[in-house]
Image (cartoon, rainbow, N blue to C red):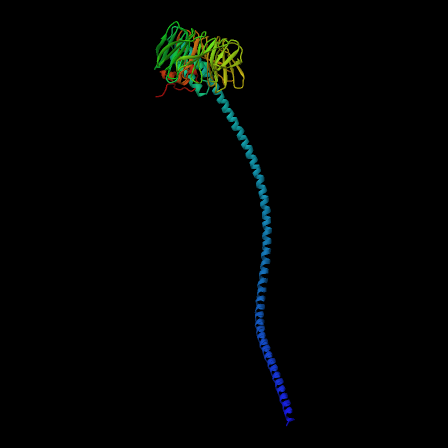
Length: 521
C-alpha cells in the first residue's frame, strides 16, 4: 500500500507533467499554426497587393509606353519646331542684315539729305541776311534821306516865315516835324525846334518890370510866379488862358532886390535886397527887416529843417519863418560871390577857387572847386550824379559820375543860371541866349531855345515843364513853350490847307508820297 502511493504519485506527476508538456506542445503548435495562418494571410494579402501592383504596373507600363510614344511624337515635333525656328532665325538674321544694310543706306541718304538741307538752309539764311541787309540799308538810306529832308524843310520854314509867307512856312514846318518824328530823329535839332518855335508862335513877352528882373520863383501848388527887380518891385503873376495877370505886391526904388523865395502855396514871400534888407509877406502882413552885420545880401537858401539862410558877401544869417526873425548871424572869412545848392544844403563859392557846403552856421565843409575860373552858376543832378559849373567867361563844365570832365562851349559871356532835368541841361547867359544841352550825347552841343538882345538874368519852368519863363535885363517876362508835341499840335490847328501838287513837288519832291497835313476831325 505504501508502495502504491509513491507510484501513483509518480504516475500522477508523470501524467501531470506529460499533460503539461502535451498542453505546452499543443499550445506551441497552436501558436505556430496561428502564426503560419497569419503569415499565410499576410502572404495572401501581399500576393493580392502584388497582383494589384502588377496590374497597376502593367497599366503604368502601358501608360509609359503611350507617354513614350507621345514623348517621341513631341520630341519629333520639337525637333521639327527647332528646325523651323532655326530656319526662321536664319531668315530673320538675313532680314536683319538686310534691315541693317537698308538702315545704313537710309542713314547715308538722311545725312546726304541733311547736308543738302543744311546747304539749302545756309543759302536761305544768306539770302535772308542779304535781304535784311538790303532792307536795313534801304531803311537807313530812307531814314537819312527823310531826316535830311526834315531839317531842310525846317530851314525853308524859317526862311519863309522871315519873308512873311507864313502859310507856306507853317506847312513846311509841320512837314519837318512829322518826318522827324516818323523816322525817330532828334526833334530838338536846332533847325526843327527853332522852326516849331517860330511857326507855332510859342513865345510871348510882357514888359512887367521897370528894371532888370533879378529872380523868378515858382510855387508848386498853382501855375503862378513871383518876380523881383533891382528897382524894388515884387510882382505876382498867373496865367489865365493866353493872358498873363500880374499883381503888384511891393514897389520901392530904394530896394535892390536880388533874390526871392516863396513857399509851396505862396502864402509867404521873402525877398532880399542888396542894400541890407529882407522883405517878408505873410498872412500876418508885410515887413521890412534889416539884416545886420552883413554886406550886400544876394541870395536866400533853405536848410532841411525849413529855416532860411540869408547869404551876403561877408556873412550868412539864419532866419526863422515861424517867428519872422533873424536868429543868428555868422561872419565869413571869405567873400561869397555865388550861391546854389548841393546835397540838399546851401552851397557858396568865392573867387579863390573854393566852395563851401553850409550844413549849419557852425558846420561848413570847405572844398576846392574842381575847375579853374570864377563860378557864377551851379547845378547838380542827383539822378545822373552830375556836378555842373557855369563860369564868368561863358564856359560850362560837367563832372559826370565817372569823374570825367566835359567842357561845353556855346555861350559868349557870364552864365547866369543852370538847371538840370535828367539828361537835359538848360543854361542862360548875359549873352542873351538860353541853351539846351543833351548830356547823354557823345558830343554835347548847344541848341538855342531862346535868344534876345539883352542879358537873361534868370529862368524857371512851369510845374509841368512845358513852358520856360525868363526874366531879362529890360524887365521883360517871357513865356516860351518848349514841349514840341504841344507846339506841333498848335501848328497843325493853324493849317488851313494842304500843299498843292506843284508846291509839294517843289519843296518836298516827287519821290515822296504826297499826304495831307490837316488834322482830321
